[in-house]
Image (cartoon, rainbow, N blue to C red; front, side, top):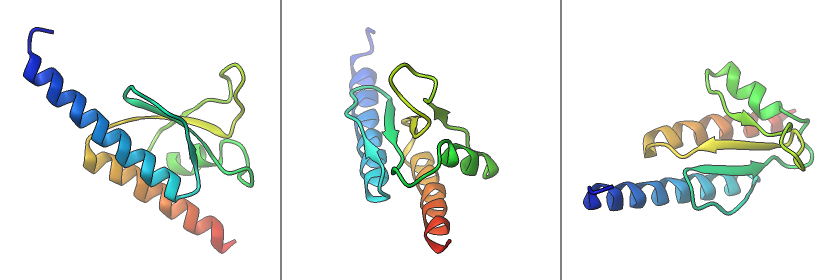
Length: 105
């Protein structure tokens, strides 16, 4: 806590990553809920079958948190951690591929 510069830098990096993920997910049709921490809660479109995104990402070696067992939420809700820009982009790329595959069927 005494490392003020590190704390400020980490906070700025987390805010940029949060914005990167939020904008990317919204462009792909997901509803993203406001956040001030290093996690984002988002919801898949209603046309998606519950936990589909989680299953498809797992096939690609990416694990996200399904929130269907959270009080008041259903299987269309997910939570992801804000990571470094490159990792955030890898997640968004994988989700983009899943969205594109789904639009072909």
